[in-house]
Length: 319
Length: 266
Image (cartoon, rainbow over all chains, first blue to last red; front, side, top):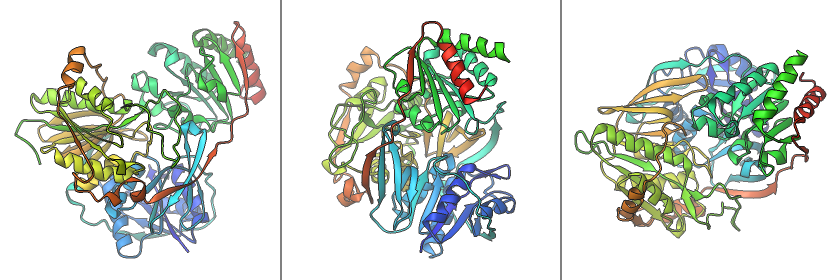
């Protein structure tokens, strides 16, 4: 039976929810589930990783000021070469996850199935991908031999504890040379108030239809009134109205809130991939043909500059 | 592989894709249908612009392009040449149809080697059609170069590139010796529009069209057969239940309030 390794990303002593989702799924794909982790204090996250199904945490230790991609890929490749590595590797479709998958793929001359939103057990497992903005589901698998690398989108699976515990075992990083020459000289944390975009029960997103950057204030106000998080389409992130961290979509965050409100967003493929899983969708757009109106539970064909202020006033009057 | 001292030579990976404004479709082999006219991927405009600005800031050097297309398409490359890039290498070959990200990376890496003296290679974080987001890093690994992904700001200082790299929490400041590969997020710079003069000049710029064999790559490594992965099933996603669409007559906000009430979010 297959040995599955899961890339365990963490920040501030907390495992990313994506990594816990992958561990949960990994239990269906193989009989041995193990995690690969790095950082100054891997012991502190081993409990959480064990509780979600990892029997061993392969600890690369503190990678210092290097970016994780090259070191982590090199350590996994060395384990595979030594015959102690995985048959299946699950990485998150995250900043560092993609770096690891790309480096490892080229190193091993093995392909990667990316943007995976579903996995079914098999030899090798079959991956599902949502294409054309989620309108079509494609199933794909590998034709060659193990190891099989899958990069999985956030929120594809629910994270559920299994009640196990993990042993921590060191995994050494081989000499990486010139490829590992990038150095992190400073880290900046951008503070945001209110709930996290990818965890909020209500998300209110704005797009190009807002007309100008100053009008994004309406999105923030509405989000606050609904105790939700403000989000954005790629168009207004590209235009510099709001930071990249606000972006919902293929390149940005995947959200699945109870309620998603899209204001002045037409519903490009890029955006739909990131929010189509929302339980309820309200869309306001002046173009009756906008694709977003076709997937909305409540679609308003109207001007956001009129509808949003009226809605905000009505909600204020009730609170 | 660094060129003349002081020169800043940048190679930009450019993808030519079906116009995203039109609905996409799959061909008989379940590959994305690329038979229509291809245009430059919007995501690559940022890399081209960034490259032009870095060369300008250095005072000398040039911007080159590499691209891969199954059908000899050059329209997207001409757009980037019209913006100010000096030359392009296009790898075009029937055997490339159905290539996966790793096969593409092998081809692009070989094309980049053909352009000597690259100090910096730029690519988008991902393409707008395939969006695997792994090709640039695979290129870096094949070429034995360091890489910094998700750049939202780039400066070159002598033989070092300084990057602000997007993270979950904010951004990291990263430095990396050249030569290196950097992927840029959309919005890293504002791409220029090609001028009429630029469009005319682009027609005369060198565009070197080569085949997989010219690059010395075994055809079995690329295309659908080299991909090492296959599509087993294609189905329509479960459609969302059609909702209610209302034309605002000044009272649509009340519909929204009623909907919010029903969901108990207010």
